[in-house]
Image 1 (cartoon, helix red, strand yellow):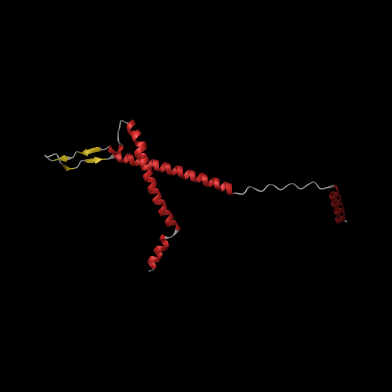
Image 2 (image 1 turned 180 degrees about the horizontal axis):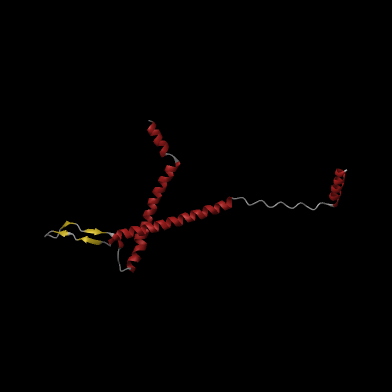
Length: 147
């Protein structure tokens, strides 16, 4: 029974729940960025390089073996470097997006901290010049001290 209560305490701790929410949101964000890359960024790049779809780029190391009927007996052995390029573009764009998002959050929190800090207290006003009566009284006091 102790094991279950320990697990419950662990699973309900704030850090674990925050991390789970972060992973879920990160997965959704990754799908959005992948869609942006695949559907918006890569088609113009493919068009610029001659209509190439990067995910279709591969190097055929061994051709497929066909039987007499033209059916594939052994599939071709290919090195799919186009898919690697696509995943690399995805990663770079996701990393850059996260960098921009974190920079934005950092700027906002710094601005909020500056607004929360109290303004420095004004410097105290200098002591006013003593009046003639005060000067005279101070001289009398000093003379009485000396006697």
